[in-house]
Amino acid sequence: MIQIAVFGDVHGNLPALEVVLKDIEKRGITQKFCLGDLVDFAPWGNEVIERMQELNIPCLLGNHDERIAFDIPVVPLSKHSEEETNARFIAIDHSKKHITEENKQFLSQLPFHLKLNYKVGKKHWSIQLVHSSLESNDTYLYESENDEVFENMLKDSQADVVVMGHTHLSFKKQFENKDWAVNCGSVGRSKEENRLASYVVFTLDEEKITPEIVQLSYPIDETVRGIEESDIPDYYSAFLKNEKVSLF
Image (cartoon, rainbow, N blue to C red):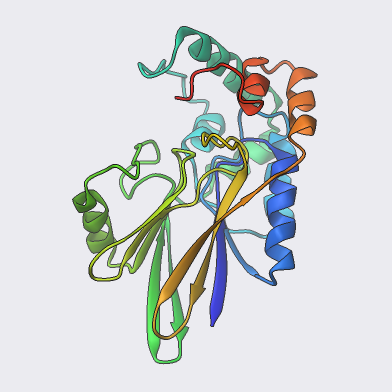
């Protein structure tokens, strides 16, 4: 039996990340992977990046990481309210100013996606890691998507499992051929009502792969305080407190 942990969308939320890493360690899982979006919205972007480096955790290039690494202009999104649009511009500008050049360089060299192969007994399992999809790190794929969307991703990647993040909403879907599409949710900026830090554990044996979505409470008040004491808009502290802000 082999276990691996996959998480993503930390978004500078170091207190949430530390709780997730501690839980992974408590479970005795040594294989850890991150699907990207280390930065933006909470004030510890540098510390999160440096934690990934310290622990040598393989990490993908999320759309926020790419924007900060290459100073890509921020484009308003039609799904956002005016309030969220304004807050988003300020929060991303904060990251562009505060993420160190060394850490921007680290982000710029992250892989776009990663394919894993594990051998358990006589069985080879293939696991495809993406931030949001095979072609883009900014495509929103929800549980409600037609099964064909995920089945095509599995076919194109020739994988038994495709694991994604980006939407900040966790789910797991199994298809008739027993393949899985899994969203690990978000460590640092969950859009689920409970606002818990979310990640996924995969257990691999010779017969099957079993995904478990793990959701953990963390010292959210510490993150709220960190945001409110920074130049990041209080919109994001209100979001974490589940006060009246737009979810999307």
